[in-house]
Image 1: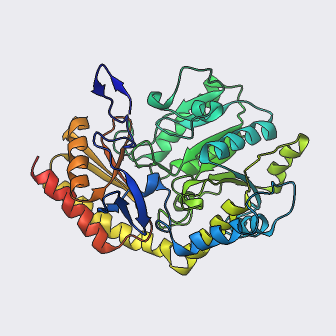
Image 2: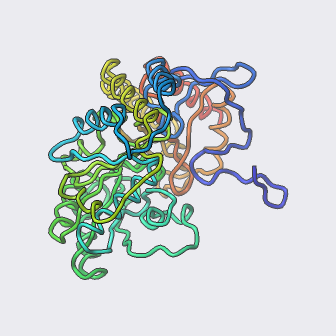
Length: 418
């Protein structure tokens, strides 16, 4: 753990490091266990990554079975584990999104998607949304629009448009007004043509921000007229987490490129880019290669995840339990002035703490206190948002209503003592 002048540095925004760390050594379903055997309810899911539940037996079995056959062969050779998962994944996509490229992470997936958009259109300009997060490599750091995640390195060719944030945004919930800024950026910041537009359906690191209704259809239409491609970053909102299989579905749009990671492997390092055959053709102009992308062990895990989601009806559970949990969180807003906003879909929920509801003053210190008290009661949650004052609630999709009650009761008890 880093320290500055003898003082422990708090985690910036997302709860990766707490003042009082715990050593997690075991996990099962929606629970984690420390080295002393104490059980914690995991309401963060490894940052929206554990989809089926910790150490799900079907996923573990698929990984072990594949490990006993062949661990690595590279995509230079054929392997049914890779092909089977690619086919199953493509079947989950709308329209002509049928070509799958495997990567190791969401950052890699987004890097590849941005490059493909630039190659396909012949343009360099990318538009992304302020407060969005897309990764920490060169291109994705440029697309990321929060200073706390951006190192002082060259980041060019990206324009950041207004964030359609219904809670803090200048136009409230009027999505079409925010979308007009996309056209303004094209008119005044580019040649009139762009490579693409990348956005999350719900901003995860940014504090579980739901895009204002009507925004994505209007933004997509504007980008298309400028010759650009629309990229859906489904790294956190994909794989049934929001109650829909993909987050973009609730906006009524069909992207040109979809990126994914995290829940795709239930914790196994795995990412993917899915696009159309026409767009995918650009990678044949040179040799595109990823040593571990499409690793048979990882893709075997990915196929097992898809099967578990379907077999255990986890998408339906995310909707039912997530709706119940959101209602219970809204009841906290009715009781405690410290709760400024509750938002999200399915099991991708956010609760923002403020010290003044009118001014929306971020409750940065208070949220750390509540997190620590909840941890002591056996509940782990994440935090995020630019100001670090938003609870990120993204548990495994096997979460139950009883788990939701325990989480909210623990949070409510702590808030009552503030």
